[in-house]
Amino acid sequence: MIVVATADFEVYHGVVNELRDRGTTFTTIELDEELPDRAAVVITDGDNADAFANATTVVADPDDPRRAVDRALAAVRGDGGRTIIGVDPGRKPGIAVLTGETVVAAFQVPLSDAVDVIEREASDAPSPVVRIGDGSRLEGAKLVTDLEDVRVELVDETGTTPYLGTGSRGMGDVLAAVNIARLEGEVVDARKIEPTEGEIQVIKDRSRERSDHNRAIDEALARRVAAGELTIDEALAEHRNDGTGSETESHETDEADGSEPSS
Image (cartoon, rainbow, N blue to C red; front, side):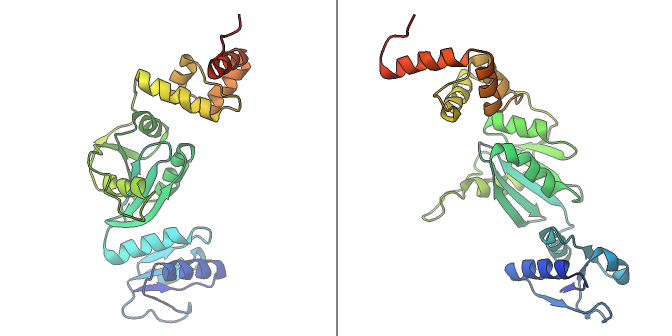
């Protein structure tokens, strides 16, 4: 059983609500009470951790009660507390956080936010592992390159995307991330990808979609985006600033309306 024992109202409120949301069996006691016989782990605040030195103790941060509950549940289940983060890469990667065999958190965020989410979930975890699927080569390579101070494995993601029944639209990337997390991969610290012409064209098309004036970046900038040196927005700004943007826009507008480009 999980026991909550704290005089910190914020810790108490956050942890208790998190436990209730997960349907977890727990009890609360005052700091001067004896622990129940069935107590498996105590969640408390930093000021009172020493009071439970003889018990398995989790210190809760009032700003992050979920992390404390994750660790307490791992201790109760005997999972060893190992955090494995599975990532299905793409423009909006699916991210699944597992403690042992239990999924404790799931996210789907823009690629630009993914590294921050992964590093936050891995921070302070014992021996965390990040497993990234080998599909979506360019986005996956960027994640591998940008992640620091954490073990990263590249996983063959063949067959990890499940069939989605009625009403489950939008869940595929996250469920694939769960499956990726459960597969061992090859340890990598970098992944250099030479983009194909098709991948370069996709980047150009995305830049046109993001542009306020139907403007696509040139191939040189698209290759820098593919290498992770620039975001598409940064490439558009550079394209605009180097004086080629207005020319490209004018030419593309002429083509779009069917007229001949002006000489």
